Length: 234
Image (tube, rainbow, N blue to C red; front, side):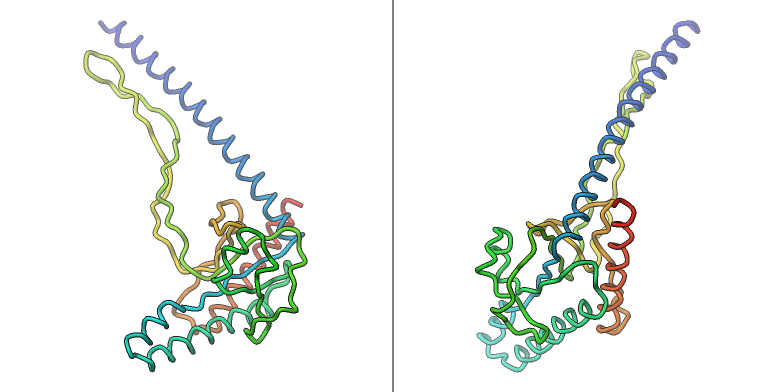
């Protein structure tokens, strides 16, 4: 009986080692592909432009006015205007990785379809300016918002545990994070899809800081991260 148990344990260890090797190779392959994608993205951004999406809160403002809450609507509109203007000022002062264009969110579909003749970009005073034309060939998008939570489970490896009738049970092991989203400056794809590591796709914003300081700090930090990442791979 002891010889049988020993043989079974050896077999279990062999299964585990082979499965772990296969999982490790798969994980390494995925990591290499992620690096390749990130290198391509940072190269296209450096040689292209960053399109920053600005939100207007138009639906909320309209709903308030329909409810007769004009004062609240005026306050929300003024707050959003100040917020957007602060974003433009922060990029103007702290960002030099690539050219930056600003647009309102109602032009999102045109940006996704790369129909830039239909997009009216914003000038430094937050006013639509038809003289601003998109001159880059490639681009990524960015906005201030909340990062998407990472709820995806990723396969890591198999392990084996003793089961009934001395037969080993194969157990799947996963890695990943269920971390909730955070307020951040986020870089996204042309289709407004949040990018992934190793690309430095977000900088967290700490609400404890005054608005102007936290916005400038986030843009400055993002600019620094992009320069470092580009220097690493190009």
